[in-house]
Image 1 (cartoon, rainbow, N blue to C red):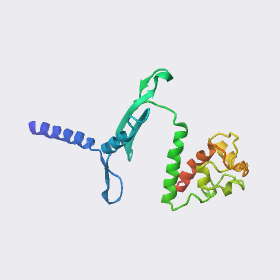
Image 2: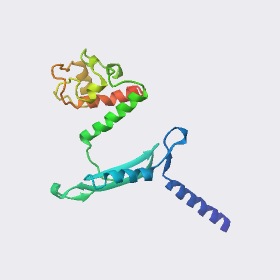
Image 3: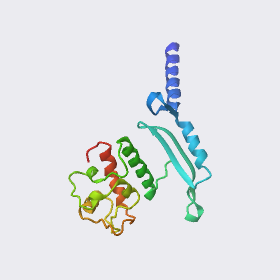
Image 4: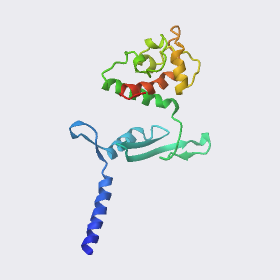
Length: 196
């Protein structure tokens, strides 16, 4: 009985210690990354240099690390409180950086250029205006697509309408319009080889 109990305790201890290992395979040739070290490196660069942030590292669907630093709300905003990993907030246009990085990643993986045209990567069942067939990935990322500043919204139905109605205005190519980045959601999926 004692041997069985010792074996069970050893197994539990092994599982606990194994689950604490933060080294994960991240690339070819068995390249690894220690996620604890990654958190420390990020914290070294950001702590004390920003108001507050959250960090979650997940690998292949398994959460490896969570970390929060600083303030979620400042005193001048009312209800001052520290940042926690459970705080929820709207990223708003901060998500554009993530979207652009994802698009550049998939363009690179597919050996495509930012100067390539976007139209063949939009849903095949959408009706595309002649103007949309002249837009490049770079023009979307730099808000130089020429889409009018008329707000159509960023949902599926409105984006479909936007690209069909030739709302591209070549006399005003530099108009900030969230539709530029909203369309990238479809382009990233399509470039990655998934049906949309």
